[in-house]
Amino acid sequence: MRAVTWQGKRDISVETVDDPIRHKANDAIIEVTSTAICGSDLHLYEVLGPFMDRGDIIGHEAMGRVVEAGPESGLSVDDRVVVPFPISCGHCWMCEQGLQTQCETTQVRQYGSGAQLFGYSRLYGSVPGGQAEYLRVPYADVGPLRVGTELPDHRYLFLSDILPTAWQAVKYAGIGEGDSLGVYGLGPVGQFAARIGRHLGAKVFALDPVPERRDMAARHGVEVFDFDEDAHAAIRDATSGRGPDAVVDAVGMEAHGSPLASAAQQAAGLLPPPAARKIMETSGIDRTAVLHAAIDLVRRGGTLSLSGVYGGALSPMPLLTLFDKQIQLRMGQCNVLSWTDDLLPLVESPEDPLGVDDLVTHRLPLDSAPEAYAMFQQKLDGCIKVVLDPSAK
Ligand SMILES: NC(=O)c1ccc[n+]([C@@H]2O[C@H](COP(=O)([O-])OP(=O)(O)OC[C@H]3O[C@@H](n4cnc5c(N)ncnc54)[C@H](O)[C@@H]3O)[C@@H](O)[C@H]2O)c1
Ligand SMILES: [Zn+2]
Ligand SMILES: [Zn+2]
Figure 1: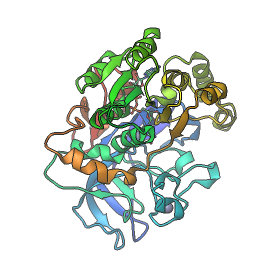
Figure 2: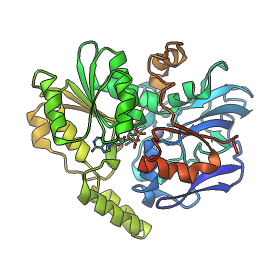
Figure 3: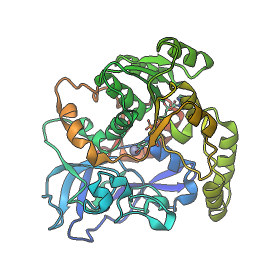
Figure 4: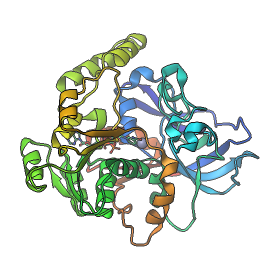
């Protein structure tokens, strides 16, 4: 089959590799009909390079048709399914708490990481990912979500990751009717977080340096701002001088505006892998510009909800300010399965309340992945969300 593979820093190629085979009775094999590129894939593209191996199949946002169903998978051939990006057993103590990303059966203990994730480096189990013609789904009795056949793929695809991620971010932010929410970053996750905030009745203020991303959010009732010095003052003015009740950080470690960290990450990307891994683990070389800005923006006693991914073990957190402002902090990978019951009716609704029809800017053949990654990372050609179609030539 054809698959998108990691070859080195900023080097992605589409290769012919062996088809996946079923190992266990609860495995399934899926023929992928749509698979998206995520902001998290950009971390693999550069920053997390030291944890990748040449030839790794990447991608963790996939849906498709079941072509092989293990006898204990609970699925049947031809089922149409969306595959959540975390891999969880469904039975352990963590899974029972709804914390599938901490699953005690699939945790990657060698690296001290949580549950295995599709296509997401050695840190998360080196599981072959979904940017491919076929995908092996372990624990298919737990993860895949069976969906109807009437609506197009893009209505369902984002249940694999970014929709529940944004939903979890807003739920963790704890806002509702009449509250105010700040959203840092208007990539796909920030777009949905902002719209979910609106859907739940909050006033939403969002910041992003990219004009077409601000325009998209403005179409959904969000007040938008460039990332500049005046934005915080304007948002405070609109929130009785206090700042929003909660702020979602939907940027993470690809933030613009942290030059020192960026140089250190560049250096890590150039060192031989074991040395680079050591630097990533011990020096806390994150890009924390947005984290600091979000701490500044949120009102005293408010909540900060991080959905952007951060790496590095020793990141300097401004504890004085966090403590003094009495900020509540929540974060983590998304426990996708905990939110799908809330989201499925919304994506299937004819009114499309979260605007799922207004997100994808590019649908391209799988073989275009190298150009698509570069375009998404550099935000060229108005690119906001790319879906790859393995059946298109
Ligand atoms: N927690 C989870 O389970 C989970 C799941 C999916 C994605 N994520 C993370 O969410 C983040 C966003 O993902 P995405 O797919 O939307 O990616 P993205 O890279 O498209 O979005 C990031 C956005 O932040 C903006 N940005 C950069 N610097 C900024 C700054 N200083 N101020 C304001 N905006 C700034 C960029 O212009 C971009 O629009 C990533 O870190 C990704 O890894 C987390
Ligand atoms: Zn993702
Ligand atoms: Zn489990």
